[in-house]
Image (tube, rainbow, N blue to C red):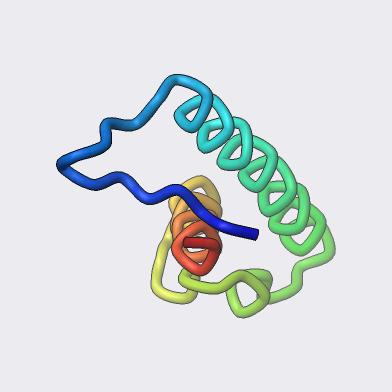
Length: 74
């Protein structure tokens, strides 16, 4: 699957922006559910999410995990 990358010669089109934020939102909800289940059972959920190891809050940890995940897609 070819990924369209933003370059100075080619601006980001609206459909790419919508798909990026949709993927971000879906990933955030998925990782938040994983973190919530882990926190509910008293597990060390930060070790399960990439990039969330050093973050103190659940929201910050989930956001760090989503950005780490999204960076691997491009």
